[in-house]
Amino acid sequence: MTNPRQIAFIALREVQKGAYADVALDRSLQKVNLSPQDRRLATELVYGSVRRQRTLDALIDQLATKKSHQQPPDLRAILHLGLYQLRYQERIPPSAAVNTTVELAKENGFSGLTGFVNGLLRQYIRLVEERGGDDCLKLPENPVERLGILHSFPDWIIQVWLEQLGFAQTEQLCVWMNRSPTIDLRINPLRTSLEAVEMALQAADVFVKRIPYLPQALRLIGSSGPIPNLPGFQEGWWTVQDSSAQLVSHLLDPQPGEVVIDVCAAPGGKTTHIAELMGDSGKVWACDRTASRLRKLQENSRRLNLQSIEICTGDSRHFSQFYNVGDRVLLDAPCSGLGTLHRHADARWRQTPEAIAELAKLQAELISHTSKFVKKNGVLVYATCTLHPAENEGVISAFLAAHPDWEIAPPSLDSPLANYCTPEGWLKVWPHQQDMDGFFMVRLRKTNDYG
Image (cartoon, rainbow, N blue to C red; front, top):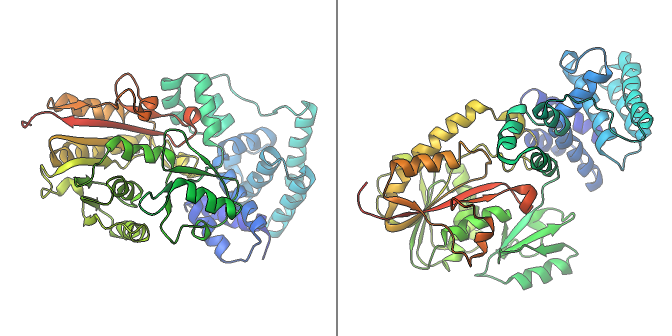
């Protein structure tokens, strides 16, 4: 079987049963030998259909007599594939999108409903043509539902963003989150230079661009093929890390010879960055609950040839061996990931307000305990890749209220990081404004011995 649409359908069927989209897609692709072009198509169809699920359901509701949730799950997945191609894939001719979707229905137990599939898709094409190419999707007046249906997000996420950004910027953020993610590299200055990596990649016809304010960052432009095959990967010249995640270690600003504790370290992007910034001199304790994820960190630090990292497996909330040990402590807290929804097609449907409340409780416990790891006048950086105030501003405000011996230490005005700084002193990266993952980070300083 080498039909990318059939592969996509099999993966979507698994997703509807509860599988993660990336896992379901990998599983489907491993069983076949597709050309790179067909792999890309199958990937686009799966991630796109999952991402745009709410919009596609709204179209089915509008075009069919039976609502989307009343359709047989497999038929709903087939309709999603057809409508996704018609609505979002400009390079696929409408006739091809219709015919291949009708074939899918025929091959997967719906030969009696091919007329329905064909009719629904052609009705969509007709409505678009009647409107001169404009959108034919009917939208409610309510701004939360309107943005949620048009851009395919749950209402509660839209609400959280609207409260912070207003309508126009929330819409820009939604559009950004539905784009395919970019890949950023972080150069290892202990092994090479930015210029050398640029030249090596360009010689391999891989295009990159530099990123303002980040001295180690390069962004891949266009398709690059498998990451491990790129020049310099095996030699440890660079690692993959999004730009906004690189900002975190610069805010921590670790110095050679210091003791730094990374309390939720796996899979290790920030840990290895800390070691690089310290010139691999000093000690970086990498703590995490999950041994398998720490193994990934060890592999990465070996590849980057870093010696200063020590592994510590376990829950940081139960560690006492680090009390007053750290010159600097990084708490890259477990979070809902609302700043990285573009990277995880199904994350928007898996998170819930209840999960956020649980995470905020965990984050509060972590910062309260791991703040004890910091020496007097030492630094603690709290970071998340979410855009939910309950996990960010809420956690920090509550911590500062309960710990009068701590204060916010914003970056200096001449620091490149000042470009991301808010009046409160914390840093907030909005993807639609800065074109990188959404992040929150704040540097705190311990001022006294009490507490």
